[in-house]
Image 1 (spheres, rainbow, N blue to C red):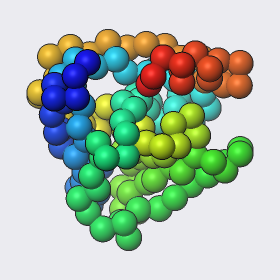
Image 2: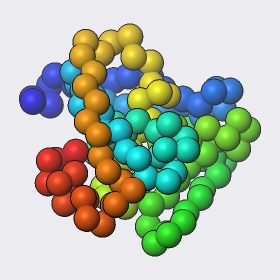
Image 3: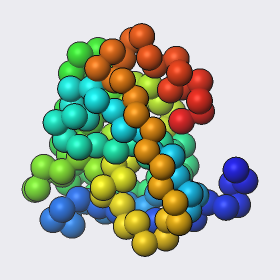
Image 4: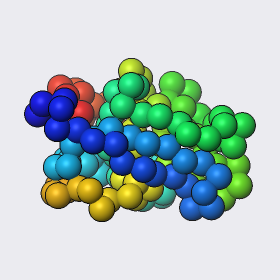
Length: 132
């Protein structure tokens, strides 16, 4: 895909205290992970590079959570508790944005690709190798 095909999409948390923009193509492949935290939160991964994400609100509106290796930085709204994005350990050079927290009106196709994050170590090469 050509980077010129990508456009900015608005997103944020439930209460509106956290807002952002994410640059993505109108046709997406979203990673649907079944690891412990993704399964519990319903997180649908839209992976983007750091320069394809703009936080529009002050970072003081966010709280950070880590677990396991403490590499991933999970950001939550301090007011409503929604995790709309984070820095994943699989993609530390970018962000994973929860598609559920993005205005989807400009997307023309969304495909879901399952990822067995319950067995992360055994499967991560395939996810990163696919360029997600």
